[in-house]
Image (cartoon, rainbow, N blue to C red; front, top):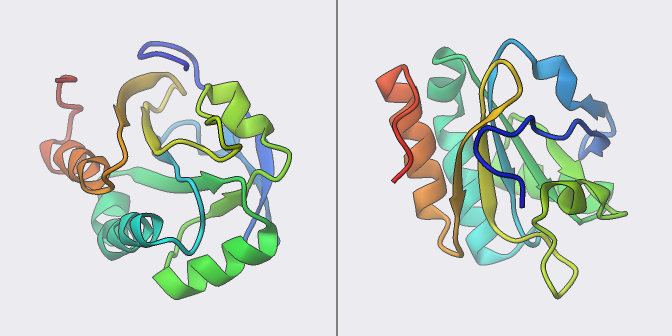
Amino acid sequence: MIATGDLAPDFQGTTGDGSPFHLTEHRGRSVVLYFYPKAGTTGCAIETRGFAQHYPELQKAGIDVVGVSVDTVEAQKSFAQECGAGFPLVADRDKSIARSYGVLGLLGVAKRVTFFLGPDGRVQDIVEGLRPGPHLERALERARAGTPPPAP
């Protein structure tokens, strides 16, 4: 898995609404890049709905949010609508994005890992774990502090 201080691997993909996505287009802004195992599952829905609910606050703090899973574009579209996600959910069907970040699990789905990227594209912080709550909590801590909190 890539580590704190690393330059986040650039990637291109397609979002649930069919739009192209390119990570470098977000340079100059902080990014919450979260990988989740499977669209439509309970934990992933809780996490995505949480990010959706707090998206305006994160945006106000200068933080973009991007979700990635190995699901299809069609699954991402349904999932984004179901969760009210106003941010891109990228389909990683060939699993190249998950592989480049080192988060592809043994079952062929992404592990639940969130990378906090600085405006320069470097990883400032990482949250890893099955429970979705800590991922959103760290994002909100960062947004409310105005500066990234130290990693635990």
